Length: 50
Image 1 (cartoon, helix red, strand yellow):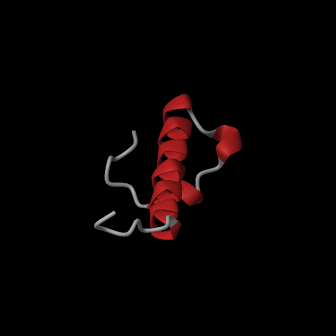
Image 2: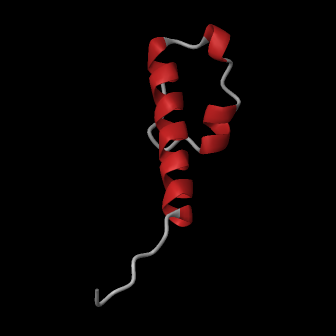
């Protein structure tokens, strides 16, 4: 069973070769959330008042 509060480190150490479909889905979701966070940090900020 996967705990919803599992850390990214927990998802990173998952053995993908032996993972269940549920574990793979959680792992991909964790990667997606991390990538979204990084992209938001790198996104250009629009100037206000235009």
